[in-house]
Length: 83
Image 1 (cartoon, helix red, strand yellow):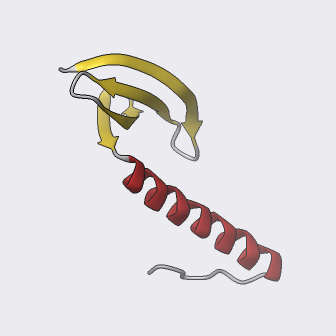
Image 2 (cartoon, helix red, strand yellow):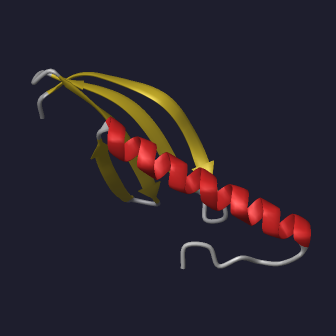
């Protein structure tokens, strides 16, 4: 691989199935940076290297989903937002 620097930003367990998620800052020799998402499920790993634009889009979508879910739980209804 062409990385020159990998720095862990966060590492946590996802509920309810306890996948281990690690977010890494990766600086590449080709003079670009990615956010690496490493998801471990028992012995299997899934790895995504994404750019800043993708990280923003993905992050916003996750926040919108969580906010919508929280609002629907407060009002006692479940929303099918994004389905």
